[in-house]
Length: 109
Figure 1 (cartoon, rainbow, N blue to C red):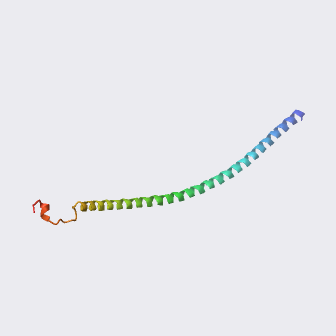
Figure 2: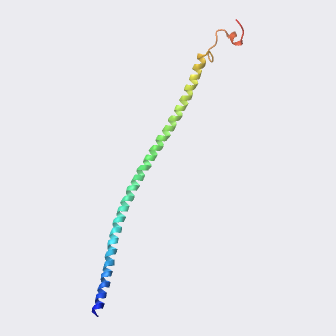
Figure 3: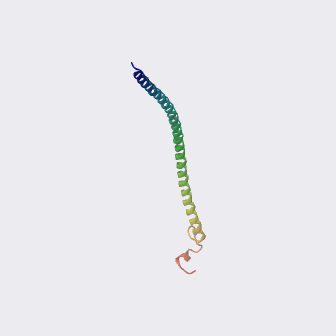
């Protein structure tokens, strides 16, 4: 074997060692990346669980608000009816019976 061949073999050996070191380095980086991705995914899953709980609570609040709104609407209708009755009573219409029922018929006393 000549010196040139030995130098060539050493160069090839060094290249193979460099590739092995690169593979080991990349594998280590990928392992760290996988670990950080796993931690990130578990944190995101926890956030999603919390958001689901918040959505359920929000749904309850919206339902309660809708029920309350319908009750307020019903009360508003009742108040309107009562106000109309009071207004009719104020003008002598509705439940009040006049003292002289003939006056209603247009007869003169």
